[in-house]
Length: 442
Image (cartoon, rainbow, N blue to C red):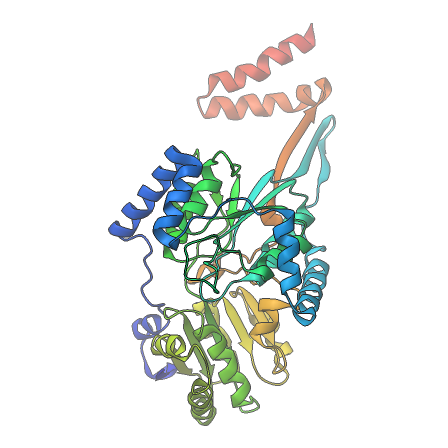
């Protein structure tokens, strides 16, 4: 990890040190390949999905759709301990998200002029859950629970099937059983064995088996990310949840910080991806050295240490003057996860303006938010926390404005509308009011 003393470098160098690793999922070759996959699915439907499964996964499932029997079978494969853990996470995430959501309201802006906001859930939502080196069954909870609370009537899930582990023959694999169990807890019954960009295309445009959705949620590799980008730019496609980049964390530490705790938080994100970035900000050079030593020690026994080591190369240690300056640096960086890993950290919460999710105090690891504390782990990365919030119930809702004006109301308001329309040179706008006013005088 590169170490810099913040006050020893100029503004240009400060900006440079806070840059993320270059992450461009839209290179020409990738864009062309993903576009070709999307075209195949739009034109070929289910047959194209099966052909692409053979090409990319090495086998095609006998059925794209998962049955109720498949889900029951998956549940029996899980230990009671894991099922209980998922149930606790489900309860906490539900409790936190139940407080969210847009609220309807009505305002009488003038006599006879009623303006309302009404709220509607998205009608059909699609969830993509990757299942590569780390099947993200926790993401099923994070996406499905707020959608369920929002009242989305149609929710479907796509996740790639895996080749059976106990045979070398090319036959149907199963979706990770924890993914299916989490989906069952969330009331999702329409599940499909489809992975990659082809899953995004299937949900965006629909096939004989997979219904078309209005909006797609969920993480994925660069092919999935590029596919979401392409279908969201097509009016005939589907909206995406938020722009995505590699996972990241910023840890702020002081002399009270346990270096073992801070190191574990930094590594918890470094193990995600070689392009992940972790940042340590502290006013203590001594504490920085202790945390680096703890990172080196913990890396030795980390199964995903090679991934974490690569991510560490993209990472930074910044020596600040004090904690208030560390907070200012973090606000400039706008991290996906911000961990205040020191005693009495609550006092600084009001000073934080840019972060996807904040973890306060030495006993609040980032992992809690990833799994079971109740907050959502689908968060803005790559500095998007400056203007985008993490996933919530509102992402599964839309609002519509309503106005209901009586004849008396339009008589009072009409002249103002006509004056403004004429000033903008929009005669038909003015006429739509003046004709009514003339009628009201009759």
